[in-house]
Image (tube, rainbow, N blue to C red; front, side, top):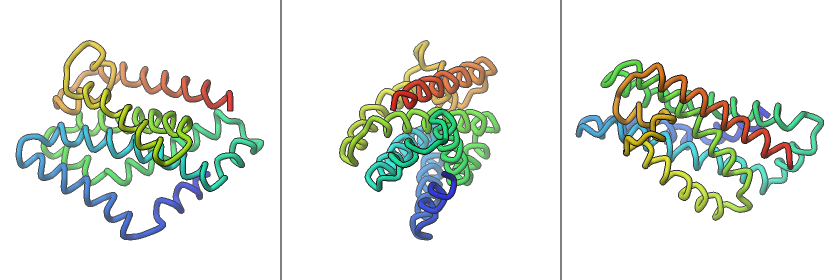
Length: 198
């Protein structure tokens, strides 16, 4: 599984460079105009939900997804490996961008960004599992990221369950870490229950 995800990720040096440089430049420019925390949150949400979902749909269109589902590897383990590998790849890809957030707002941005990456990878994977085509994944991703973006901007009670509000407002909260970990475990449980039916 790791070989499939890694080989696709580094398929083109130009793509890898673009995946690293573009978020870096966007977030750096946004920090120069006082909107860096918000931009970092949006980059995490939009990039990863769509990217994680697209990867699943790509595996489906290539026929790899069906072979993985039919393999003797248990579905919970398969999706745990797939999700953890995706989380690792996104952390590596966005590390320079996350360091900009740390430079301007401190280590709390890094902590909540790691939690946010885990949340959006799991959400993107769920979206990808239910999408049947590339067009549908883009539509489903859009429908998914709009409420997530709202959670990052509007400080209502449900916003504080997710790590996005803590990034966009540049605040540290131990409660926020624990609540975000609870959301990650809940999303993982939903993903496992969902894929067990495949």
